Amino acid sequence: MLRLAVLALLGTVAVACGSTSRSAAGGDASDAQEVATEEAIDVGPEILADAPLETGPWANWTPAAEPLRKMIGIASHMDQGVEPNADRDFELAKYAELGGGRLRQNMRWNRVEPNDDDWRLEGYAKQVELASAQGIPVLPQVGYDVGWAMTVEDGGDSTLDPQEYAEYTARVAAEFCWWIKDYECWNEQNISRFWEPRPDPYHYGLMLKAAYPAIKAACPDARVSIGGLASWDDVDLGERWGYLKKLYEAHPDIASYFDVLALHPYTWFQFAPPEQDQTVGVSFQAESQSRMTEIAREILALMGKPGAPIFYTEVGWPSYDLSEDDVARFAVRSVLLAARDGVEAWYWYTFFDDDPSSEAFRPHENHFGLFGWPGDPVAPRREKPAWRALKALAATIGAARYARDLSADLGAPNDVYVLGFVDDEGRRFLAAWDGREVPDNAPGEVIVASPDTTWELVLPLPPGATGVRVSDLVGAELPAPTVSAKRTVTVTLDRSVRYLVVL
Image (cartoon, rainbow, N blue to C red; front, side, top):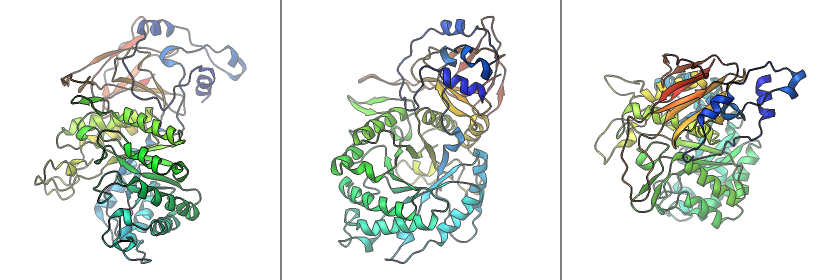
């Protein structure tokens, strides 16, 4: 811990957690190699002023507040009944393999209060009880309409009575404040699937402004989140998070009525990798995960709430258009980029595959799971590669905190990443990969996929290091790279994350 404190005190430029998309970086790796040959010295409190500055990629490591594993959760569809359920028990037990895990699920209004003041919370209480017994934080999504609360019969979501919504959210908060401290108001209200017949930022703002003080009164230390926004508005496809801007235009004081912004940064057709910034056609932008987050922060700043925490309450890729191995790669890279970009919580959608029906047009919805369909007669609850990869992430660097993006210092091209993490003992870890298999494109430029893309990472060792240990996406140890005469190691990066532990 002393070495960590020294690094933080002597760093002259902190790397902000909110930095996002990175253009092709300059920098001379050979300069960093020369710096890395400086002799290490012991650092004690009595000679703190004489400690040497670490420069290049090893300088300015500023650990985040929480370890990486605290971010990771599941947007689940688990059973919420009172009776025992084997699939629910299986899922909750598996969260321990992520170092704890978070759980996000609906507490639907039409089930909590099917009739006015007819409260049905028993099943939800059972779920919260089981989760809390294993120390799993729960994020309820409080929303979806009930006909009796509409001021016009069958009038749609924009005729819901905001005060009735506030009463329902307050009842949930009062019931579960002992364990639940975050509440997400609605889900994907910016698309007509979840706000019928058409998204309505003005009326949603009325609902949020009624629910916020009601939840706070019922649970004073709770945080209230805007409902997770779908990555594209189905009303206005041309502007990323345009609904959020319209919410602010309709309610200039809306920043006083939420604590957290929830996003669903699904990439283009849930197919593009998390790093790709794509121009579709002449000008339509399909941004990367990082760029989507950056745009959201710009809007938060416009609203007067630049420091609001961001949750990804859904993110994922289906193993329908993509291979299961590609989904595993994207999942881990998504978590790592979210950590770099200062995202507080990351929830994968979802735990189990659904019945693999092929009847619908592009039935990808059934293939987002980390485990196969429980009803599969041949391989029920089959562990998919994405689960193995997330489990390895948690086991390898889950206890460490994001501290530094080393990519530019090491001369990495755009969409090649080398991210630094540090644990409470001062041990340093790197997570590195080449994310250019589907490269960015300019308007009119044809994208040429490059699944075999690689980049040679030449890493200067920090003072006192003897080498690195390298493991692959699922945690298997790889041959250790040789330390050169210049005290560097060379690791070939590809689209699967490599973990490096500095020895």
